[in-house]
Length: 182
Ligand code: AP5
Image 1 (tube, protein in one colour):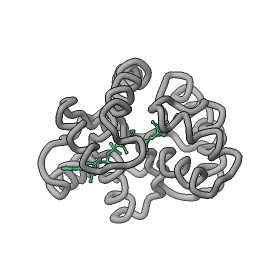
Image 2 (tube, helix red, strand yellow):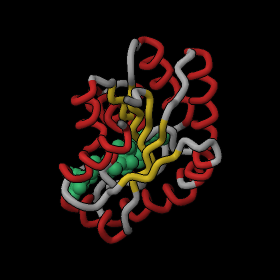
Image 3 (tube, helix red, strand yellow):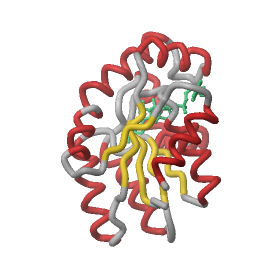
Image 4 (cartoon, protein in one colour):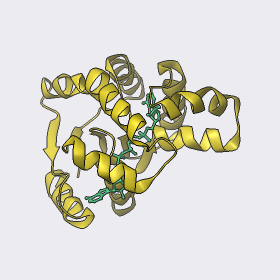
């Protein structure tokens, strides 16, 4: 079983939902940069104060801030992991490569989840997080296209990318992902 992997895809594709499920069933660390940032916002830390306004606008928080969180979490962890929401741009992907080389923990697979914009927007509006209003969602989708989507080619060129279904029930998507990872 693959035990060092990452989920790539637009907001609302189901990365967090599937990552949580997979992490539980396979005893992997689920590292979601979005969840970690929201925890900092909730705690009212300096880091959270810096991130909150940026997140509510649907922009990316600074690479340095996110990288510090990922470095500190992965370097303390023994065992498999699953990255969700990171990397989000080319500099983050390159920094991840460097970190994983240092830790001697090569990435094994990148799971790509994609879905049409209208369905993404509907799912996120139904969820209703503070950054889930239509204008911010559309902006997050644009940020995804501009900054994150180029990573598809980055990982495809290495033969690490595997597209997984994003439509169907949460359970049927989870079953399809488990098959891909066997
Ligand atoms: P982040 O928390 O990563 O949010 P996101 O990428 O916008 O992803 P979402 O959580 O919206 O979508 P998802 O694909 O995880 O879908 P989910 O499973 O939740 O980032 C938030 C912000 O933090 C960013 O905008 C940025 O500011 C900052 N940030 C985070 N990481 C960063 C980084 N690396 N660099 C810089 N900034 C960073 O599902 C969505 C909804 O759909 C849920 O309600 C779910 O129940 C439902 N659903 C899931 N699967 C299905 C299904 N099969 N059928 C029907 N409904 C489904």
